[in-house]
Length: 491
Image (cartoon, rainbow, N blue to C red; front, side):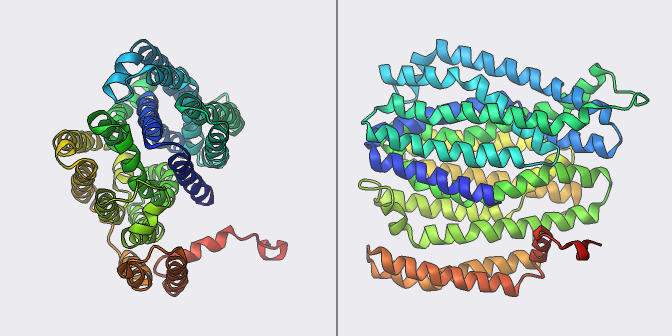
C-alpha cells in the first residue's frame, strides 16, 4: 500500500512536470505514444498475470510443487515471442501508427520506433513481477514498479526540460526506467523462486502437454480480456489525439489523471487478493472468501473515495496544478463525469478479481469485450461531437456496463455481493468529511490555494477520526499484525 501510494503520487508528479514544462502538443504526443506502448505491453502479457496468480499458490496448497517451475516456463515463452513480434511490427509500421494516432511526423515515427524497440525488455520485467506476486511476495513489485520507475521518470522529464529537449528525449527518459526496472525485476524473481526449484524426488510432475492445456485453457480468455481492459484505459487518449489533436489529448490526460491517483490503494489490494482468492477458493472456504471480498471493497472505498470527492468539489484547484490552458469548462466536466464513474466502480468491489480466481475467465472475457465495444463505439461518436467530454462519457458508460455485468455474474455464480456495513460507513464518512469543509471554498470561486488546503486538512482530520471510530466494522485492527512484536510476546 505504501509503495502504491508513493508510485501514484510520483506518476501524478510526472504529469504535472510534463504539462508545466512542455507545450500541450508535446505533452499530448508523449501521452499518446506512451499509451500505445502500454497497450502493447498489456497485449504482450497474454493474461499470464492472472494465470500465474490462479495457479502458483494453488499448486502449492495442492502439493503440486513440481508443476510450479514448468508452468512459469509455459507462460514466459509465449510472452517473449509475442512481445518480439509486436516490437517488430511496431517498428516496421511506425510511420502508419504515428500517422493514425495523431503523431504523424518524423518525430512521431522515431518516437514510436524507440518505444517499441524496448517492448520485449519491459514485457519480461512485467512478467517477472507478476510471477513474484503470484507467489504471494511483493518486494519486487514495490522496489521496481512502485519506487525505481516512478522516481526516475519525473526526474528524467525534469532533466530533459532543463536542457530544452524535445519530445523524443522526453519519451526516452520515460522509457529507460522500464529497462532498468526490468533487470531488477528479473533478478528479484529468480531470488524469490529459488526455493521452489528443489522438488522432492518422489513427487511426480504433471506432463507438460497436460499442464500447458490446463494453464492456457484458463489464461487465453484472460489474455483477450486484459487487452480489452488496456484499450479501455488508454485508447481514449489515442483517439482524442487522432480525432482532435495532441494538445487536446494533453488536456484530457491531465483532467483524468486523478483516476489513476485514486486507484493506488485499489491496485495494491487487488494485487494481494488475486493469488489469495485462488488459494481460499481452492480450499473451499466460501464464507472466508465472502468476508475478505466485502472487507476489500470497504478498504478500496476508504482509500479511493476521498480523492474522488476532493477532485469533484475542488475541480478548479485541481486543474490549476497543470498550468495555463488546462482549466476550462470541458475539463471541469470531465473531472465530474469520471469522478462519479470511479466512485461507482470502486463501490462495486474487486468483482473481476473474484470472477477470475473462481475460474470464470471466459465470463470475464465476454464482459470485457462488451465494455470495450461500448467504449470504442461511443468514443468514435462522442469525441467529434463533444470533444474531450465525449471521451469521458464513453469511458464512464463502459465502466458502468462492465461493473454491472460483472456484479450480476458474481452474484449469480458465487452468491456474493460487495455490500456491507463497512462500505456504507466509508461512503458516508468520505462524503461528509470532505464535502462539508470544501464546498464553501468551491462556491466562493476563489483561486487561492491556502483556503483550499486548510479545508482539505480539516477534511483529513475528520476522516481519520471517522476511520478510527469505525475501525472494528472496517477490520482495520488487522493492521496491528504489521507491528513488530517483542520476544516475550512472541513466546
